[in-house]
Length: 284
Image 1 (tube, rainbow, N blue to C red):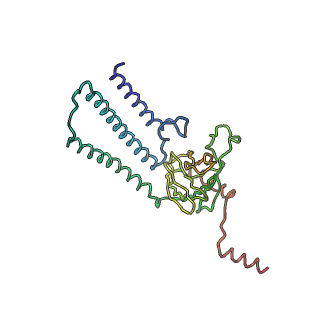
Image 2: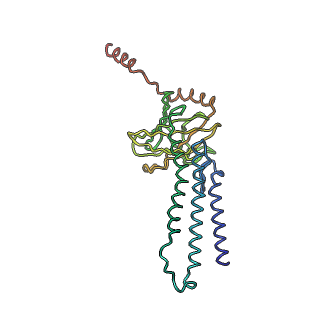
Image 3: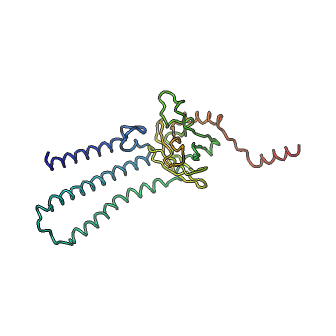
């Protein structure tokens, strides 16, 4: 095969790999071995993030191909056999202006959608419900303040997995949300730093002791399950902190909430009632 043929074959292989990386997310609804690309986006944030990712992939691919073409052209055009007397040229005003202006324009093209996405992700005030998430070594705690509900979520041990359940991803009690709802997440920690990361929802927020970080997700319509993991190296059992977000239709969510309150309800007694009970108990 000639040099030109090898070069074209290499470009074809590179292009095919790029297409697979872009389309890879559509082939997997959850993490898959040897997966390329992103998981299918769920919600407006994930859709915008995936769109930005695809734009950047096109830009990076174009830059890589352009630089490769320049290198090949330089190696062929200015090889020693064809240029026994090397050029004495040291400056070229046009080229120097281009390699300064063009990268700036590329960065502007990247910055515009990037800032739009950052500001969009910061709109936590327009949410419909709140869930407080606390990272612990090595499990998650989910608290629904408005419903006075709180429970822990542990990974299911491999020996206890049922048929069809996913190794290292299933939990005993997932975080349940109503589908078609914008949910504010208040993420904090009890010990070392953890990270609440659900790829398909495009949410990643650090859980840090003594600090509350805000994020939000808009879970799309339809019952579905979204998987994630702590991706901050938090200790010896770092690999055993999976996250499961289960979206239910509104009626199903209300039914789950009623059952969960019976099992996990943390009824908070008002301070004045508690004081009266304390005084009565001390008097008797």
